[in-house]
Length: 207
Ligand SMILES: [Zn+2]
Image (cartoon, rainbow, N blue to C red; front, side, top):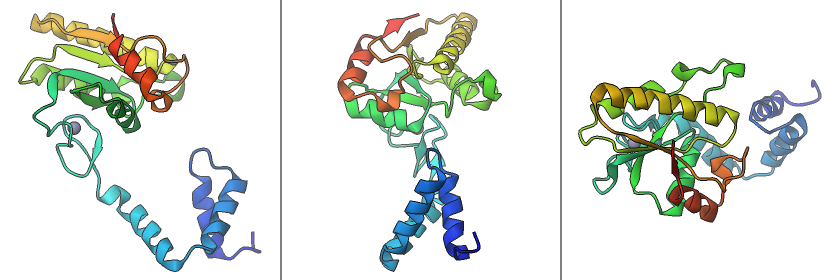
């Protein structure tokens, strides 16, 4: 490694820590950046610097946002009686792209994954339940749009049980639905195309 200038090896190491980037790609990216004009590099650096500084989690839905509440929660035209629960902020983008959903979201930031020690308390499930419990206009439907894999299913089942319990305590009726089949098993919501996702949303089924 002594062959490489420190400034270069540091960038390589940073790239290596990114998901899906191996040592070879990290090297290639770092060397590529050497050819980029200084001005563009400065812009890149300042975007990175502000990435976390200028974003917060929406206090209502936990989506990543520049202002709190986020544009969805702050929009009076959205129907707060329907809450769509997703694993990641990128899932919100995918569902918004379909233009078929007019409710609000709740972002869990993960899924229940016992093998990796991620239980219900490690993701934003308690916030979801509290939100439903305290809702000004009662929530009528919760669409659980977690990914169709083992962790997503486990998360969906857990949420459904908790909401059923909550509804029972409150003496209310809350419909819990799951996205329809058509989403390939094991595929992430994030990568589903708009048509497939629209169909899955329209054909959602109750538990
Ligand atoms: Zn929000």
